[in-house]
Length: 79
Image (cartoon, rainbow, N blue to C red):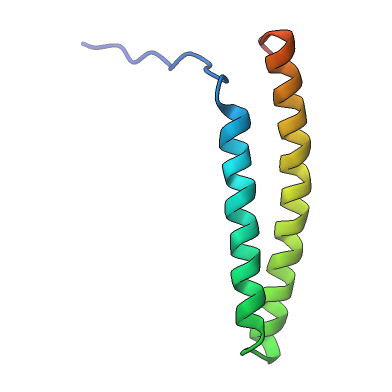
C-alpha cells in the first residue's frame, strides 16, 4: 500500500504567480469594459458588478504580493 504524502510548502514563486493573476484579472476587466460598449440592461449591470469584484480582488492580491515579498526578503517561516 502506497502512502500519499503532502507536497512540501514551496512559496519561492508565490509573488510571480500572484502578479500573473493580477495581470490576467486586469486583462479580463479590460475585455469586460470593451464588451460593455455593446451591452445593456441586466448583462451590463452584471459586467459592472463583476468588474467591481475584480477590482476588490486585485487590491487584496496586491496586499498579498507585499506580504509574500516581505516573507521572501526575511526568509520564509511556517505560518
